[in-house]
Length: 189
Image 1 (cartoon, rainbow, N blue to C red):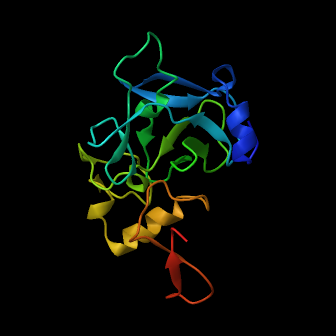
Image 2 (tube, rainbow, N blue to C red; image 1 turned 135 degrees about the vertical axis):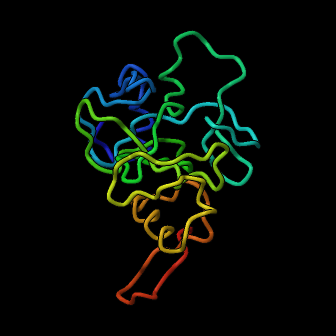
């Protein structure tokens, strides 16, 4: 699972090879590593259907594009749609690559560790906002969506996403380039 090539990784990520499990975490389900996962590895594929409306459980892939469950679900398919159990963290260990339709490790993840991502990297406006309890020193507090953060927080969000394309088109987010503090280029570049 320690490959960084999306083409190779997509072929190698088979259901029996998943290094994750869905389990209960203090009354809530979460996704946990069953083995060590190397940084930038594909952890799982983003499967489901596309809807135009956000819900508490969808993942925003772009403007009016939200990853949702299929209408018909099969029994015991939690791993097929494990993205529904990813909990938010302001300092996450994973991120959505909506271009490649994968969820990837943003750093090395140890066996037994809960796998998380920052909801602000995908959601413009949360269908169900909440008070974050992640405990991070850099916690964003009340999570309403990216449309509700300050410019300073927007920069911090960009810094949580590796150099891969951001999860949804974020025309307002810019990345610092060069040596000048005010030197920016579009994150979509």
